[in-house]
Amino acid sequence: MTLSAPPPQSSPEAFRPETVHRRLIEQAPLRLGFHEGSDFSTWSTAVRHKLRELLRMPHDHTDLAIRLGETRDFGDHTRSRLVFTAEPGADVPCWLLQPKNITGPLPVMVCLQGHTTGMHISLGETRFEDDSKFFGGDRDFGLQAVRWGYAALVMEMRAFGERCDDRAAGCRNTGSLPRNDDNRTCKHAAMTALLLGRTLLGERVFDLSRVCDVIERIDGLDARRVYCLGQSGGGTVVWHAAAVEPRIAGIIAASCFCTIAASFASIDHCTDNYLPDMLQWLELADIAGAIAPRPVVVAMGRKDPLFPLAGVEVAFERVRQIYRAAGAEDAAKLVLGPEGHRFYADLAWPAFVSLTGGAVSPGPVAGRHE
Image (tube, rainbow, N blue to C red):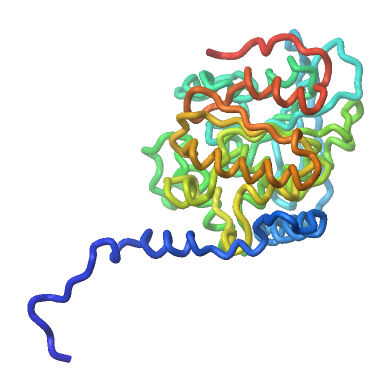
């Protein structure tokens, strides 16, 4: 071959990986995307089955080996340490909070933190130097739940908090990163799960499904009213879990919702949010087809840099269409807070109670950290 002069030219745009990815996203087949006029029941079932396949969840339903610790009094509620085994080698630490002076069986709100330093944030507790920065975003979910009359089961997710990566220092180069940086927490676990034909998101959804098994075995809890509240990464888990676990009676999913093109495919996100092959089959909003007609509150911030508002509104309009097709148009609500990537308790809880009837007549959501 004869070399030419001057050198061959090409557009810099064609050197960038996102150029071809953007084209493929625009052309994504979305084979199970929602279409008006489809038979809803058939489509919903197909979405649920395909999502289970994409999540690549564990299958080993080992004995739960539930360990429930001593109950302690915390004024307006009692608190017990709870540990169970989700699958061999995977113990799940939790806290069970129960409001006092309310007769059971109590509805349960399972509370999942996002990318904080752990589930202790749901308890309003600090354990690490930077924990105080998380409190301004209404993230003490467990305390909020008991004050609205729910038992709160606060669960630690894989790769966060007490379940963090504990490999030897020589296996990592992350010691200088913040404790909750995704390169220090979820990235290695997420990538290793892919090597094993799993996803970290699927493992977390599996743990949440096993929480439903646990609740069925604890006296005083109403297994027919198991709800979930998750924010950010916790919201992502809740959104997917409600689609594949019919025992979840309703959800609050916060700081986790948008079109994929406007969010995950354009803006840096944690590795644990990605499902291989997802856009071959469905968009994030299409997952609502496997949740409907159960009540859903999506709580987002107007200025959330990870989930642009325009993409949120487009995606939620699709959810409205799906719920309308399910005959439950009023069972899905979008609430928008004025700020960024945080929870909005004053908006989300009243919206959820209006859909579900609530647990008891609540007082104000007290004890929040402003």
